[in-house]
Length: 204
Image (cartoon, rainbow, N blue to C red; front, side, top):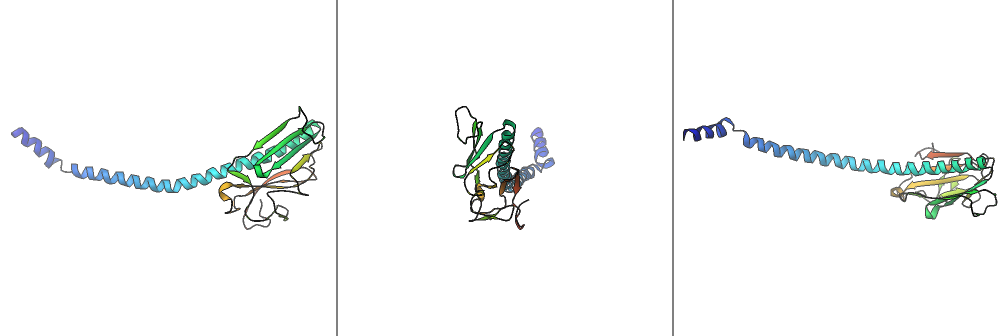
């Protein structure tokens, strides 16, 4: 009996906080879960925006680089290179026209680029102001219409204009993250621009 009394005394008299310790542990767990939920509520939307911006930037830079590549290939190979947009299919094509006849002949290199479906040609609204302050009504707006730019052996472009890229989640919502790639006819120069709300024209 004496041994049992000592064990009782030690367990319930000398260590009376055991139940409180269990209670504190539960409270701590609940607190951690709540804090984790708050962090996730903040982090998930931020991560989604980051991922969307990454997709948009990647496709914009890819379009810019492919246009630059088409121009440099025309100069290097001393022949025309045709760059054809298909905004409806969200694709574009690069044709190394070795005999400069405008026809895709056997043996000529033709590269088809399919964009990330999360990034489309387009903008919000029925029109938009381009980098020169002109009004564009189509997502691929080339001077004189059409969808083909031909870079010649001197690097000049057959036409100039702009192609607009928007993230799928911004369609019908906002142009705030819009990108445009511009082509200058006289020199064939290509530039990548980012939309800046409130500026006129709204590009930088």
